[in-house]
Image (tube, rainbow, N blue to C red; front, side, top):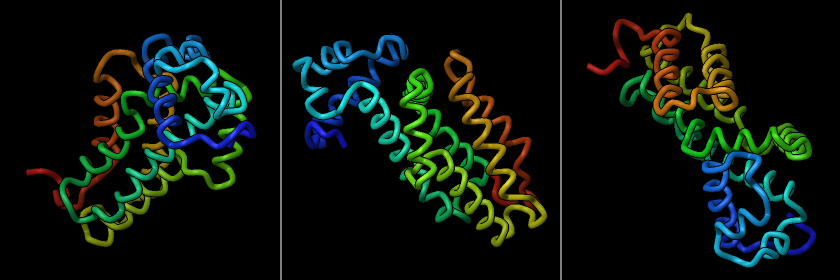
Length: 202
């Protein structure tokens, strides 16, 4: 947290949400203190009252949003045996590719200090893409125990391939609406086998 003070959750979220709108509209280059505070409808000094600098703000934005994604996907292993196997994996993958996912990823890598801080945080246990990959692998293992995915499938490699592809799409995906989702669906269909038709929608 910033040495300038402890941000209240509503202020943090107000600024984070404003930053997402700026990123969606102007890209990483447009993400400035002035742009964020104007978008949030607050005084220009507010951001620096709660964050050490713009890099601190962007790093915390990235970590906060990935923590939310990880929390959403964390329930995936518990859904083994429910619904359609492939659709469950597609839904988890697309959580990473939410409306602001690519823009936030671009903001992270556009600032070296932010990228380094985020990498350090993930390396020391902060929820990130690795948490999503782990949840996918555990889900596949659960479906294998239930016989809905063949036992000879390599769940860890399936999860790695899917998470790695989503990471690539976050950074280099198509700007065309729906194209990234189409690619994820195609990948899951190609990679994830189902046992004797089990685990697939009728």
